[in-house]
Length: 240
Image 1 (spheres, rainbow, N blue to C red):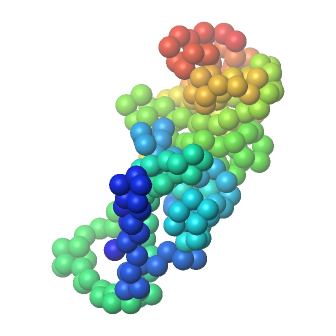
Image 2: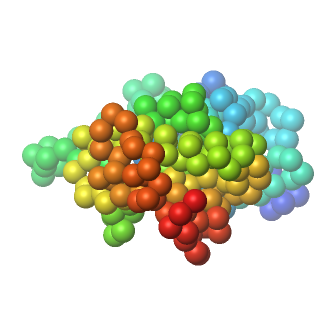
Image 3: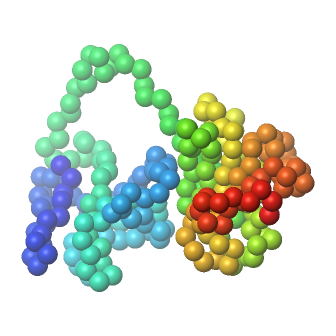
């Protein structure tokens, strides 16, 4: 059982037992399954490389969360956020653990297929963070056959942003294209404004994948094929 926090707003009760999961010193790791286009309502994502969590504001440290972990916010007091998070822990390390034997049909069933982009996600995240800005997400819109790349940029100006959009499209497509079994027609880059302001997703650029094939993308061909939006996709310009 994962320990939960419960309270009425004035008095907070912490349901921790020695015979239950102890979170002290546990670092919660989440894999690249968190590829949602946006955080769900009421959810937040850890942006620091490592952040401690405590049993109360300025209280006793219980453990740590690493960058990218998504938490569900259930209350807030000033700058402190009370949250609920799910995770997995190795059962034999828990007192009172009894292993559940899988049913016959579960043993004989085929392993679950790997999610699209699962293997490429760490490489894309590292590429974006090291060369282009701050990685915000990578996802596929299967209905529109679009690969979406989300990142935040600083105050770099319109010309550098346009060059960065092209470079991100080309480099990321080169990383993921061979591993996809989902048809993709277009690659889209979503950022904030070129002066560093605004929300990620305000500025968009997208281009058909056939223009992105090859080691070097032709600037003129990309400029002719790409289209751009500065209002979150409500309107599009065919030329920069």
